[in-house]
Image 1 (cartoon, one colour):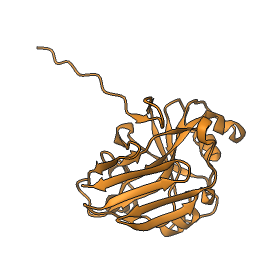
Image 2 (cartoon, one colour; image 1 turned 90 degrees about the vertical axis):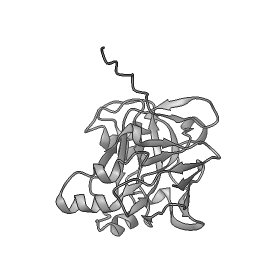
Image 3 (cartoon, one colour; image 1 turned 180 degrees about the vertical axis):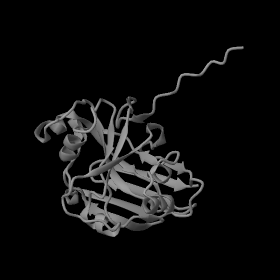
Image 4 (tube, one colour; image 1 turned 90 degrees about the horizontal axis):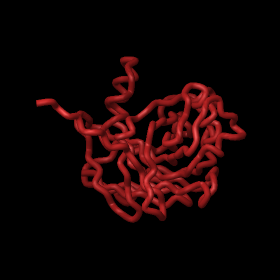
Length: 232
């Protein structure tokens, strides 16, 4: 009997205020894009060219507005870290996009978390190996509803924060980014042909740290609401 491989489902994120879904193609993440976090991770916060890594699209975990979702603590780690980020969703793609036109490619923005098996990432750094085991755990990219730019504009300032078990762990302003969203899009487009459905995790402030089972995380970006996750 022939084996029939089922068609894979396309990862998708909710669009705020609608029943629409935003289908996701690729997930890019920028590293050390806030000066204090760069220092926290042992880097130099000067404006050297940004660097990126990727998560699988199916590593995203959609978080509905107003819901507290269960977030699984992944295996093979004893040091699972939170990183609050603003997520950028693209409606248009292209190559060599000028900075002056980059924001025209944005569909909208959302609150996200780049959850990281820090012990595995640190080991990979020491051995000069790729970061996938540290960055690509199942459901390691929780993302809230995408707010269309037509409704919220293009946030360049405003509070970004993460609370864990009732205590604020990360708090900064979007204006603290070393590389703006427009610059990130332009830079990425020199290496890849970007496309509709691509999303970018735009970097995390300082204060990253470990979370444990039973704790609740609340991530927020001013103007984009918040996401709530219970680690199980």
